[in-house]
Image 1 (tube, helix red, strand yellow):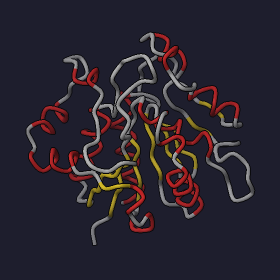
Image 2 (tube, rainbow, N blue to C red):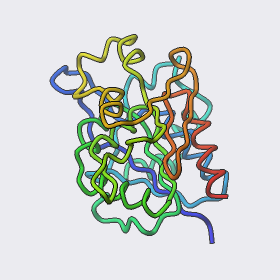
Image 3 (cartoon, rainbow, N blue to C red):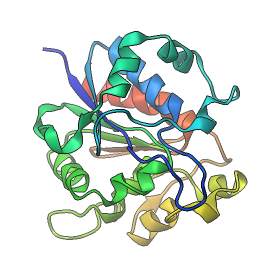
Length: 228
């Protein structure tokens, strides 16, 4: 049977009270989606609210568009899947061999405080089901705990979108919280690349984290390798 991969997207499309629209980063959805499909995996998309999952308008800028995002735009099945994500509370989290969380700023507002999502991550990691998270998605680990009640990231090597990267695009002041500070405060060994925007994937047990949009392809490849 084909391996089953669950992609969990944000339903949130507004960056606090800034008036700035946000959502899932397009290439962090499109590139992993096609890598999983090309590997022969069954791919399911879910989100807290179900239905259409928003894409960050900024990620449609020409400088961020890729071959995969352009293919996704013209792919009727991909568009239908994105417009009809399953409601996370309605899925059986035991049905999947691997899990992928694309990044985006919306994740800080809904997924990072979604108790069922957090509990599922705790269970997946405990059961050694690989969980891959890229860019701002590792922020969802802020409140995740081990069975002993310790922060899930304590003593683990992790990465995610850095404070320096948020500051470079002048968005840090609009964020609900700092991903880097949250994971570091919880005892995570935060591993950043030598320069902003370089790909960086960190693996520690069942948890795979990627730093930024440039890490979307390599972290998807790492999850494919785990499932093969």
